[in-house]
Length: 269
Image 1: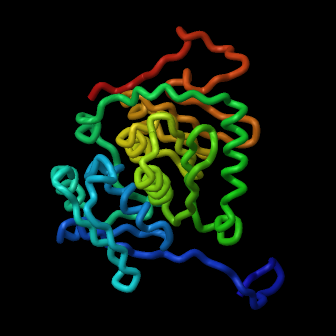
Image 2: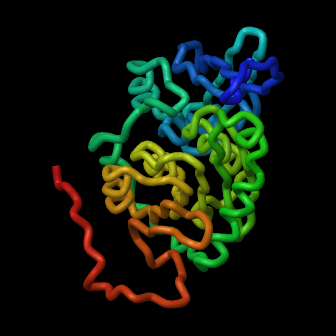
């Protein structure tokens, strides 16, 4: 029933599906991802890589999705990081990312070298890509219940996913790139959701140098980005954007800020 301000009337509405996918890694129930039920192989691949469990797609020996049992059974080779897998075992339910999920901490940052990829893109081109990105979000327009993420390769949107969780959507596009052996050191991740420290950490683990959202970053996300060498862009919508870290990767026609004016207040603890 829909109330229109005057009366309730019968209506037909489309709503998004929430799918619990349990990831079983070498016989261990590693985590349950609450997600949208598409692109699940990319989701699992991206999730394992972005959480530091695997380094490349070659670390996976087998990956089987069982839609009836709602499981993803993963067999790994010897190259996976058992320490990262053990860390996930202590938080076996991973939310969709809308109200929770894992958060970056100092221990997460310790073993990650700074991202050195010198990918650069013109501000005008980035604004154009964000306009294309938002047009692709058909499910969001029909339901209002999804986030979206895109993977930009050579200034074109190579992969695009919508999901009930903003982190799931990011994992899916990263997994797509990893499964296709793409060079991610020159890639850009686009997102519709708030940029948390976890989203920046996922990009850094995958060596992605630029993360862009139409929404806002958190303070800690910017601090993590500075530490790990990731360019964070927020509020990229219409004809505007805010560059919060490492602005040299975004080429602007007119720059009014001097290098001496660009300062970070990063916590050392």
